[in-house]
Image 1 (tube, one colour):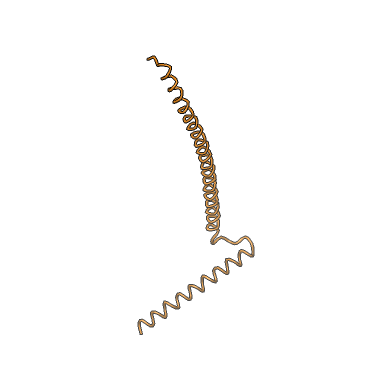
Image 2 (cartoon, helix red, strand yellow):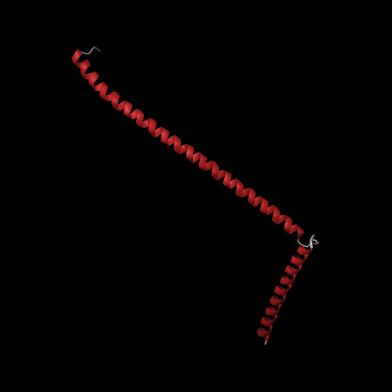
Length: 115
């Protein structure tokens, strides 16, 4: 299709405006893309930090569970230090006192119920 000089002139005028709008849109899209890439980078960094935090908490929990296991195994074993022996005796004494108190309450309740 062949255009006349007038049609070519009009089309050049239109293309000039369209090209300006297209370049503005291209620049806007580039800025939007850069902002979104930055947001993705920040989100990825936050996710990595969150993963590291979860791992640290899981490691700590595992370590505490291991310590708890070792302490539980030691229950009833002979204490290594004199201080430990005093702590065990104190715990046993406390447990005996609590058991005596519970027995006294049960016996008292039984006597009240039967009299």
